[in-house]
Length: 382
Image 1 (tube, helix red, strand yellow):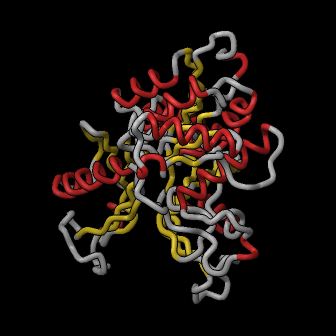
Image 2 (cartoon, rainbow, N blue to C red; image 1 turned 30 degrees about the vertical axis):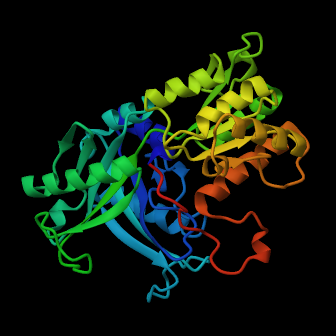
């Protein structure tokens, strides 16, 4: 829903009703992940996507019907549909899509959800997508670490789902959870109970870029495009200015190692954080890498430089006391081998390596790889 939130809020604030279609479950090689959304405004305009084009038309029609009738619906799309008129996914996957009307009456907490996301506060939305009692389909509860709002129809169900949703929120995961009709713990294969889709909206992952150089400006643009909250840090105030890095969320003038240490102590670096050191200067990059590679949780640490620079840097880090395991966490020289030359091309190679690291990709042409195109997440991101 995050990708269509601005459009949803425009309709919500105006007092209208939008049709919201959300991918709640994927099977095999589905083109969009769970949580991907498409919104249909009252004027018929569309925002977002649930399939990259395969079933958009069918979902659009269903969304308009759901808005007109006011009744949410869970629909499966894929090549296994028995109905000859159903729209199949050309990629061979299957999508379960939940379509619901969204208005101030059906989703009164939407403004609070939008505010939390805007302010980087973790929040989860749990929605009943299947239930023996059709009147409970579409009910929702909004969960924050210290409270909740709304109801799924019973106190027992609210308590069970809120507890599980907080676990998913902590892990930054989105999932369908199965219960008995009143929130009882049941075997997931039991289809006689309640299914709840929990969408977790953890704060955006961070990218911390060390070095206020032209390559950093290009990387900030790429990272912003991918949804990162970008910080550029450099100790030189003449270079570290907001005007030079318009894509960055913040530009910090500080010694990078001191800044990274302070961020770690503030618990502002986690397993989704990427740290990219682009300075080429030992007095900046070695102390910064010494801190970064010793962090208990970080998703990626990379450093720019030639092969010669890399050898010298590794020797300096070893002299600083870093062990083989810590040094093994460093991606240096940074980025994938794309033959990049310009700052923009280099930025693409860096984010490509981060994406490959996250999902377990090998960085090879897809035409040269057998098996599934879409990888499962390589490691749990905290």
